Length: 239
Image 1 (cartoon, rainbow, N blue to C red):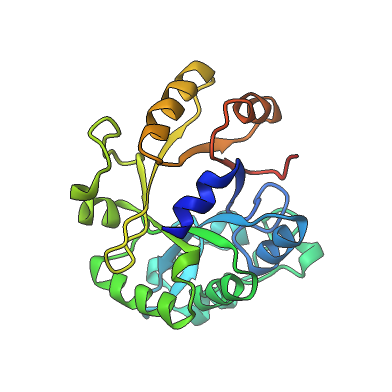
Image 2: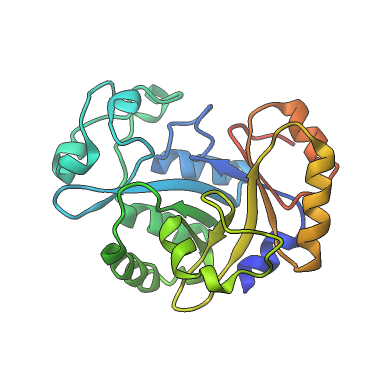
């Protein structure tokens, strides 16, 4: 799969919620700004509104990012689009951007050909998957999207590359695009570089990329960079 080859090619940073510590979290201006900074790999989250639309937001409530408390799953798209992401990093500089629709995210991917890991773990039903996959194909971005979530882990569990890399709630990223499965070993960094080296050795045997989340300190970033880990999910843009 081309994404596997891309992730194995050289060490890369994955922008967690589009570098949400320094840019307006999960917003279209943040995605484009990070891309102009040199980011090619992103992580983001989607949820479903009460009227059947998909929006790009991490939390179940809008309170933290907008200052107004609304339950995403119980709100209409129009109600959510009335809100500004005013509580996110540097939001005023970017005009307090809106909560994006998934179509805006997919247009960004089409425009830039970046790769985006989309987290489906929050309020997405199995019946939603074909709808989202059709949108992915209609935008021509099937080779630019990683689908992450329990839905895909369950559906493709039999495709596990090795019993040594077990399926757990946080173990794999899956791209279940009409039968093409992408698996990457993913785990949280505990500060133990030797454990990371052991995982790298095992994963390299099967040509499985290793994704480390979330690397929030520059010192850990430098330590992990020396291990040759494939992807580090980061909140800041480091070099």
